[in-house]
Image (cartoon, rainbow, N blue to C red; front, side, top):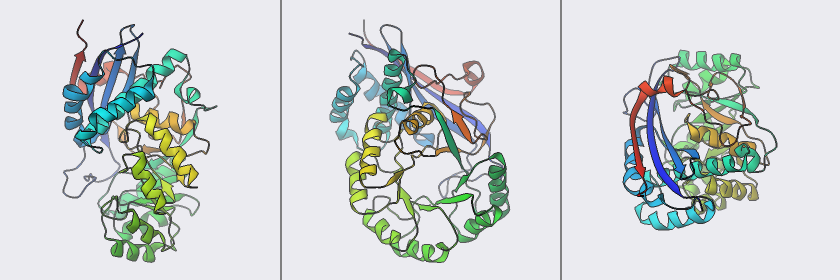
Length: 373
């Protein structure tokens, strides 16, 4: 029986350029200068290792602490081969620590790493182990926030269009910004609007009435709080496609969302929901309701690749969300935000092979917990 020997967390922070004025992705935050990945390396006693990633960005110190003090030590010495049973036991053990937030993100990282391990042992790329037949995906360009700067928004939409992207996501909140994007590219280029939960139901309905004839592909998370699924359903009745789900963290929460008729597009995030194991259940659940799945993936590490492998194994194709920035150092060969197509590696597992010589100077912190001999 193989056992987990060590768990190492590695925070890497890569500078990037946005193609416009820098903004925080939430109101009041300082401009976003670097994009972090909180990576996890799980090694077994026979020397095989798997990579995972937990969400993310500015909450990484809390997730890192959960991994080092609670979640990581719990997994040491355990058999990683039965992922479903092991992760079920882990969720039962940690449910009192919160079903949302850093502990769930830490469990996500471990789960992804266990699937990477399993695929490596099987000698297959993960998407084939999950039942997929080909690893070529189309990406869509997920823009940073430009603070309503119409000129920067239009320029970056054109830049994404010219790079070959057929779908572009905004992270703006003002109607003039929406229209600047829509008017900058041809009607066949899909524009989606991710507004990050700013409005009441009444306010969201008003916005939809103003823009529903303007050929936007979907409106994402228009209502605060994000789990007001009944409110989302009311907004959806105004006649515009609604997307949500990156802030849904459990299968049961997604079920409530779907039963409420809240969304046309479900967007669970593999680095938030507990990893690949619950992610696959969520995809099946959404499809049983006739709802399209386009996973959230606003990160660049092993979680990004896990999302790609999950999409490649889905019965219905989906575009892979890809942060449209220029990294100072390419994090790994499969993360090229300027390329509209991704071809997954045929090597076993996730195919996560970063250039550590280049990334080592960008490591913020590295910690390792090891099983007692």
